[in-house]
Image (spheres, rainbow, N blue to C red):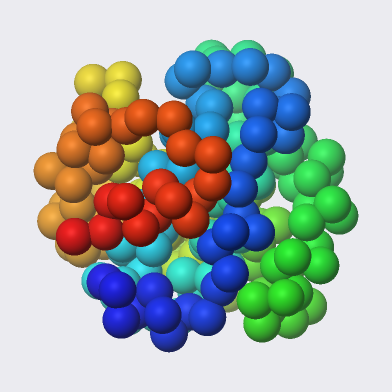
Length: 185
């Protein structure tokens, strides 16, 4: 995975979060969850060997739960996260090599991660949306209700044990970069 991470050419120190980035304070959908989802995106992207869709999904993961208003079921929080945060981070997303079409993929991925209805496989953003949905789904280990039959990629199934370790070994990190490099095998 290290080689794949290097090929992404992302300055991970710029993708750190604080409690102030979130609409509400949450132990369920806070920094730890978002960092694990971002890590899962990178792991899954590495398994798929898909640089562009990993970058799109990674940026979507970064904002996907920032505008939750509660920890319960809500199909609108992905949209709210894009509405509230996309403009603030657009230049950051462009700085990793995304273009205007890719930015639409970031928005669509964040919006659709919280919608139960599956996106059509013919959708131009099916892959990044599915990467984010699986990466987010893998962190359901924290709730004890991960059902592998809902994972879209066979590579995601290979990451279940790793997701359990990411959750059980989690400690607070001041930066995503520290979290990432502390958890790489």
